[in-house]
Length: 250
Length: 289
Image: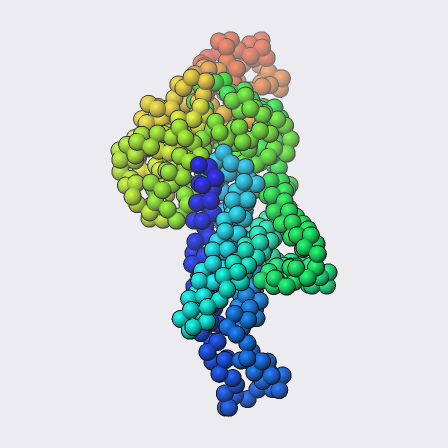
């Protein structure tokens, strides 16, 4: 009962942002999927492209729909979009309720401060996974409409990894929101930390949130290394957020 | 009900609550008054564990202040801000509140809101401050917590609504077995009407505490005729002392029917006049007349 109420409380403050994110994700998926027809037809004669770009587009024109999506959707813009969405949904919440003057009311309820943060993190993770599912339904639907069905395993892998990556980004978003009460500053801080972690992950050959759709990256290194890095960031992010929020005077 | 020892809260260089030691018995209805910035809201936040003390300790309903979760399970709050979550309706808020407090009587809350003219179907974002107050009060009254902290509950209410609120509070909250109410307010008429104890804060420190009747009988304005020049020690312990033409006017906070020793030796009591609560309050907080 209390958990459901805490999730509902988080939802109240997230739903506007979630709606905007949903529209962005659907538009992104539809544009990419519908763009396949144009890409598959090769480079139009009136396009002025450099040799490298021309070669890339020509190469893309030769690939099947699911491989095209793997490069442009799952392994491309969707990852970046979902990272931004996860952090944007995670920042704010109870830690920033002073501005709405509801902080004393919320903190007078019999729930731990850590509980409020965990509820928000869990909801963000679930919502980002749901957004990926919606995006997958859009690309799969358009693919079927164009006569290019996509293997269910590819979509499922993308959705699962998005959920894993969302937990990562949400934990850092929660942490950054306990550093600064300003939501925009917290968003920028969270994205900055994720960018740095992505770079570290790249050089250490482990999976990082910036590459969360990249199944190859996940399996290229020993899986325990990626798992350990993921667990480490989630634990440090969420644990740090709870530690700071329970000790900060509000 | 509430016991504190040296309870202190500092925000940077500002001391909001300064070494407060209180012992408020179970079942009391306590009025906490004081000028703006005296530490009333901070005291309520400390008692509920919303903020942690910088020094000192205390218990609320037997729970240590460190065990704030247990306190919040037993204590209800109407906060000073009267802010509610904007993205829901009155009924939605009551359902949300009831999820944390299963003993909330939903029909009692709706009945109170009906009596106070607040439609449960209205969006919270459309409510005035006074209406939000009523929603919070309805939720708290319907919960029937062993201890209720009310921070300026009548703020934003029209006189008719204040009367209705007081009637409801007296009817439903006062005199609970083992529990009580702490009412932070600027309104002394509210204290006189609802409370049986008073706590006066001044710059975070305790200026006065006691049962209302006892405070009224202890605080007296004395008029004493002196024989000869008064010695400084004669008026020690008295407040608001004025000496004119051999007559001393002063306030004592410990009247027991006889003059303080310093004055008794050299003076004759002309009058011991009981003081109104407003006069007692102004003297206690050091307000210049």
